[in-house]
Length: 106
Image (cartoon, rainbow, N blue to C red; front, side, top):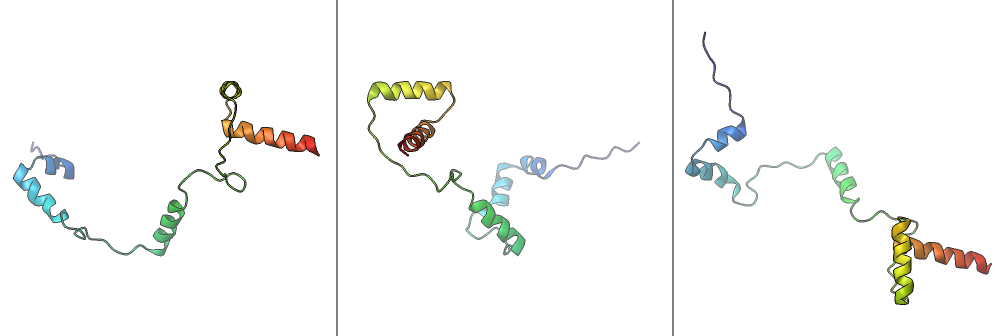
């Protein structure tokens, strides 16, 4: 019975090389533009644009604005404790409070 050698994966083949051979193999990638590329197809461009447009936080309503506000220390600690207990964000609590105050004024 003849035993066949298992074909090495590309990784295994590379790892079995000497350091000098590895250096020779990777030296072709040292210069910019050395990796052969081709232009993206229209389908790939669309996918790239779609992925690139998703960075950052999701927009809620018309988006958020940063508003520095001074709040008395004890009240802020109480609000933060309440927010933790009820799994709310501080900004969500402030927004709800503003809506309540404006609704009562009508």
